[in-house]
Length: 133
Image (cartoon, one colour):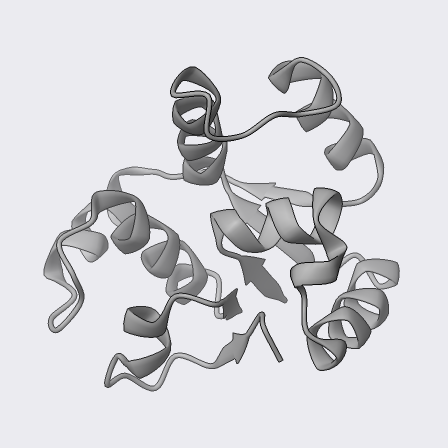
């Protein structure tokens, strides 16, 4: 399974030109197999971006979310164990959303798709794919 960072799900669904060729191929293969996921935390981040007018969606957020889930995207919940793990991760920036998304990927044994240089450079065994390549 792969977990998309917030910007990666936006790129994959709304701004495909930002995704790298390898990432597009990865998503095509894994989406068909029902192995592409998003942390529930990312929907919170997207709601913030909308409220700050830094993102526009083709439909209201709840409707857009439903469309993605109906198309096969898996939403992974954030629970207490993930919250605790997120705080305990060493070497990560203090951004709570990034920490929760990384902890979600770790909790589910998934790889992370991100273009965030800080997450890509993080010294950890978490498998990562650079969304820009």
